Every structure is written in structure tokens, then in C-alpha cells.
Length: 534
Image 1 (tube, rainbow, N blue to C red):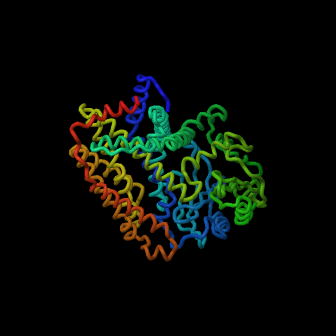
Image 2 (cartoon, rainbow, N blue to C red):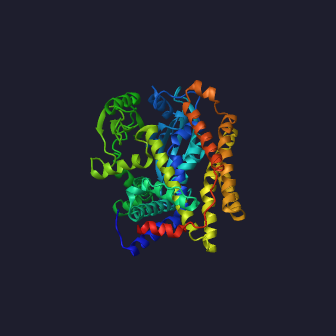
Image 3 (tube, rainbow, N blue to C red):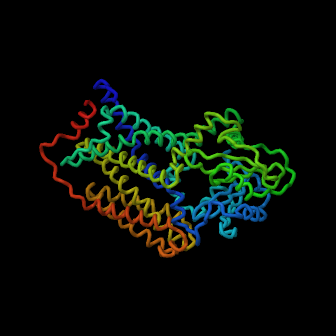
């Protein structure tokens, strides 16, 4: 589409390749875990279902259950409260106050509880910092493992966020240069030739998948970088410049939370009535509820709504926490509507693909899977074109290790989660240990086995591991299919079937017949060079 001189085309091709190779394996890890994270809510419901599926996100009397639990909480934690559904439909609440750790970083300390949506009874209760409570949050632990890998590669903040932000920038560079170097972009959307040489066939599939995925890759990279850099760099810098280093004050100014005004003790209004009013106004369900200054005359309640049908962004309503009267429709940032606030609000649906339920999530999953495939095959093609060099041969083994070993290492964490959770142990520690052990074993195999044999061993192990997960889930106390059907847990059956199908596809990939290469076939190097000059 863009005609460039030969030298510039070669330069852009080099930038395109090196931007993927230098950070490609880490970028592949972020994309793969991002694909899984698209269905994080469904994974939580699958791994930790309740006896019955709640009919609504916030069943009747949910607000009354929250108020009843609040009476058991030390008032020192009434500064801020979160309330929203989590794994299996549990109603998650966190009463907390804001503090600073030894390094001056903002933290939250308080009391968390999981409430049964049917009865309002406390299922689990923990006290501590937000990070400590997350480590004890067993129902959400499996989904959180994938999310934390995607968001920060399990690297402590702010370094993990900075790293994933850099990976997002590398992905944007690859997307932009990919757009420029593919000079027959429309044609390449539909060009998939039959080659007897495996690498040439792989190149065609890489180009087709990458071409279709270019807009999505750019959007995903841009929104991901926004989230990574805003948390690790943007807020601290803003706090340092405008708020004397007080990050909590900066966050409150950005979000638009009201300052403390009247500490006179006062009861909380009818939360269920406020949620019902918000549903009528928005034509959508409540997603998240936040309360500032619980138990005081200046109590303030914010209800975040799901997007209404045909909308990308949900509305936000504020209520007087004592009287329960509606106050205003609030922008996502600050106190008045702005173009920046609208753009910021668009980041979430564009990144997570959750604006149209399962349908949009399925599309985001497919596009994310294509992005992972493009990243992996791009690294394979780059290393295979330089296979005569020993350093690149070793790098090629590393690519195969990450490409096939990472999915296996992620899948086997379920083999730690289900039995350890059933036994009441430390699920987070067990999952991380098994992940690292599996990755290490895969790394050793990458050294001693040929790439072709390594692919076969890891694909076969991945397929068998996937096939065994539904059985392990059931043997660890989860519902069988008849029980899931009777209790309304259709999502449990759906994910079981998806996992079994994925395992079957991995095993089927081992049975593909590879045609023998012809001696007269042109080299991959020449073909790739010709594609950039065509």
C-alpha cells in the first residue's frame, strides 16, 4: 500500500523483525495470558462454582447483606468500601483505609469477605493489606494467576508494569512497520498459497494472520501500554508534580471522589433501592459499587453500570449514601465530562473486549490467539532464516521452548490449584512452584531434544494435560456434568468442553503429515525479500 525505496523497505523489515525478536518471547507470554484473561470471569466461575448460579449479579437484598456485614467491621476501615460479584457469583466486599508503605507507596488495609448471594452469609473473611488478601483469595486464584502474568509477568510493581508497557510499545512498532512493509495489503488478506516447503507455508499463514490482525494488534498494544504506564509512571509523576508526592490524593482527584466533609455518625441508606434506581436509569445491570465514608453524614455511593445494549461504555451514577437520593451522572474521570475522560473510558472495552458479553469476548479471544500465533511464527521464521549461525540455532531452541512450553506451564497450574484448594493449602504458592518446575523441565528438554521432537513432546503433554483438567476439577470437589446442569452451571460444562476440544486439537496437530521439501524450492530468505520489494 505504501511504496518505499528498496533500502527503506529493508530497513523497515529489519525494524519489524528485531522489534519482535528482542522482546518477542516476553510479548508472546503477555499475549497468551491475555487471551486466557479475556475469560477470567468465566474461569473463576468454572474453578470455584457455588451450589447454585445466582439469577442476577446483585440478587435482592444484596445491599442488606452488605450492611449486615459492615456491622462486624472495625469502623477504622470505613473510609472506603468495594462491593461486586466475583468467582461463582460470590459477592466480594472490601472495607479498607488508605495507607502508605515503608517506601511511601499507597496501599489499602482492611477487611474482606465473600458473601453468599443467596443467603447473604459470610463464606470467607480475611484481614490485612490488599496484597495479603489477594494471596488468600482462593476462589479467584486461578484466574488471578493468568491476569497477573498478563499485567506484570508476576514481576513486582512498578517494574512489571513498566516491562509490559515496553512490550506494548514493541507490539505497536511491529504493527506499524508490518502495515508499511506489506505493500499489497488487500491482496495479502486473502493470499494463502500451497507450498511443499513448510517454512514457506508458515510464512504465508504468518502474513495472512498478521494482516488481518493489524488493527487489533495496534489497539491492544496502545490500550495495554496506556494501562501499564499510567499505573507505573503517569500517576506517580502527576502526584509528584501537582500533589506533593501524595499518590492517593492524585488518584482521588483523577477519579473525582469527594473529600471528607462531615464526620457526624449516620446510617447508610437503602442500597438495594439505589441499585434498583440505577438499573432503571441505565437500562443495564450494576457492575461495581463503591462507598466513601461509610457510616458518616458525608457518605457517598458510586454505582458503575454495565454498558447498555449497543453501547461500549457504561454509565456511572452517584448517590447520597445516607438518604439514598440520586445526585448525578458522573464522568469516568474528574467531576465534569471531557474528551480525555471519554477516551480513557474507551480503553477498557477496547482492551478487554467485554462490551457485548460472550460474543465480543469470543472475538477478542480469536484475535488474541491470532496475535500469539503471529508473534510465535514471526520468531520462528526469523531464526530459521539464520539457522546456519550457532547463536541463532540456540535462540531458535529458546523460541520453541517458550512457544510450546509456556502454554503447558500455564495449563498445569490447574493441577496445583484444584487439589491444593480442596486440601485448604496455599494455592498461589503451589501454582507458582508447579509453573516454574514445568518451565524448567521444558527448558531442559529444549536443550537435549531437537526442535521437532521437542514440539511433539510438549504438544502431546499439553493435549493430555488439557484432557485431564475436567476430571481433576470434578475429583477435587467440583460438580459433575449432571450436577452442573441441574444447578444451572452451564458455563462449567462449556469450559470443560472447550478444554477437552483444545486438548484434542493439540493431539491432532501431532498427526499432521508434513510433505517433503523439494530441492528446487527457493529459499525463505529470497521469498521474504521479494515480498517486501513486490
